[in-house]
Length: 276
Image (cartoon, rainbow, N blue to C red; front, side, top):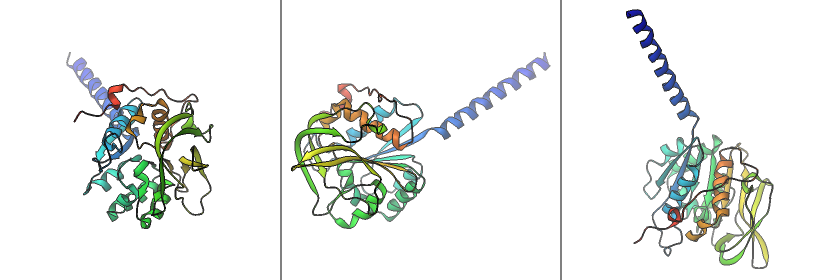
């Protein structure tokens, strides 16, 4: 009886060790996506809704196994930023004047540069790619591939067709053209001596087609994506937006995108803003 009990205890110990090792292995293999938003920046309600967008992205990404999302407010002072960045596999920047924000702390800028060296995904949305001061453009474009920056920056609210520029790119799997009202930034700044930035979305503004969404396989081996739309919060209701932004994050993590694209699942309540 004692011998059988010892065998049983040993079996439980082995099972416990196996479970612990499996859990530890799952933790190590999960990919961490840091979602950076902020409180309202003075724009009218239903525009520049950074924190609600982080909740939307958390819901969309939760439908994919092996992804751990961390949604945080990156309002100043963001002292724990470098530590959070150090543990991320991809970062989404959707906040006010993002290129300027990146430079407000030298440790933060260095953490982003180290993040890029680790081949992490870098995603920027709308004003998250912005700066009024042109001094902040160069470092930013070398990380994200595009910037709405400087005193000559251009933007416009238009009702236009969102055209698919490179249909075979994985980010655009299952994404279809869409007519909508949006504020787009255009004539964006780009890195110098770079010719492999892929245009994904173009819109017709001021008599010409302009790239407002792009993908970039960076020289460091990482991937960057930018989209200058998402001024209006209500545009999250479009499945094309949900699909494209989610697939951009998955692509930045070097995950396989289904040929027909993912099927995003959101309820109207997921998009609705809290009542005042």
